[in-house]
Length: 573
Ligand code: DGT
Ligand code: CA
Ligand code: CA
Image (cartoon, rainbow, N blue to C red; front, top):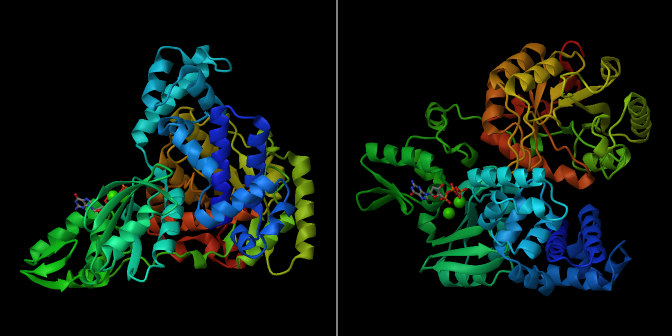
């Protein structure tokens, strides 16, 4: 179990306690402990296994917490959390997904108005009951209604990172069974789609009972919804549902192909089989009764005259033509990345120092990074003004003198203000090695205004890249409205790079926009936006999104050496 997963359970506990209206000091204690666990580089799983007595030496972890941690590592959960999960209705927990609504507010609505579902909340908000609660403004009520509308549009989908962490944990455990020959996730999660409706798990085994029995008892599984001879549908503790299929080995490839989807991709596949007088289904590719392919996906694609298509591209967006012509991209991989150009330190709202970030990046094998703390407009994050920024860069240069093997660029994440000017003077920005310009405020401005702000930033000679272009939050907040063609055209003309922000909540540019930007000749940078050394872990999600966009190593600037990278910067730099 990863530290992040353990911390996640304590954060969940804190949220549930707060909804219940428990003692604020206890709630804070769990949140602090979660932070300690999350930021610790040593594995808590190993500590529990090797020297559990050490747990209490960590700040904020006392006897009670130490016991809970041991329990979590051994069983995946602990009784207090289980009880709260049973006690508090799922609909109440779902209210946490509304933007601007935290556990405290959810708790008030649950306890004072006895609201237990999103539908009930909607009705109460429409009747004006919410704004009558203490601490709730009319504006909150309005934003709840907007949020509910948005939630309905998104459907009940989980973020890829959350879904993937859960299925990876289950796969790790089920693969221990001797009867399990092969096991893999399929569906949208295998295609690395940014959100997942439900998980699809595939196993090849001739003992489906054992696989299903083990899954039923897994600590992440809360109940079995349906069960047949070779299929099972379960609900996980998080509410996410999962389909399990158990197939014989000679159908495993066909089942992988079928259940990976997408539906659109599979329609074309079946048509190709039919054109040859064959039949394709989850059991194999058949000529009459005879199976002509089935145990591997490759075989199926080859028989249909295709090169094997990576799951990320299976959306019927041109992958068949490329596959037939042999022009499928050689998709970028995590190991191609050798730099990260967007991260924060304690100078603004990060939790690690310049040196800690640089050392952690070096450990990952990265060759250069850019420190990009916030500019002054972001007061909440202690953003830097010109004077503090110059001092910060001095500190970066000092750290550089102490550290070999990684280059540290002096950067800044500079806000593009609501009026379209930059938050810091062009003079100071030109002193930076790297400037990521971003929208944080005024995301709801009309399209023309947003466009103008971005065009101004792109024309500013100091700006080297645009970060998290739209400002969207996956499943939570729509991004700013803009004309992508205009913006990409300008970025291409001026030589400004575009970021894929790898944070699983942002993934901004999305897959389609990233593909379009690349097609327009814009170099892409994939950045973590890390606020701690752990924050570098999200790079993989940026890679997934880039792969869905069809990007190759050559399309991504932070796969280059620093020297080559510098040559790719706009001519004014
Ligand atoms: P999701 O769960 O909404 O994120 O998306 P998927 O793609 O995982 O969809 P899901 O779970 O409904 O089904 C998994 C795959 O199984 C899907 O991508 C393709 C295949 N599949 C399921 N039902 C059908 C169907 O009715 N027709 C076809 N052609 N394929 C299907
Ligand atoms: Ca699915
Ligand atoms: Ca499914």
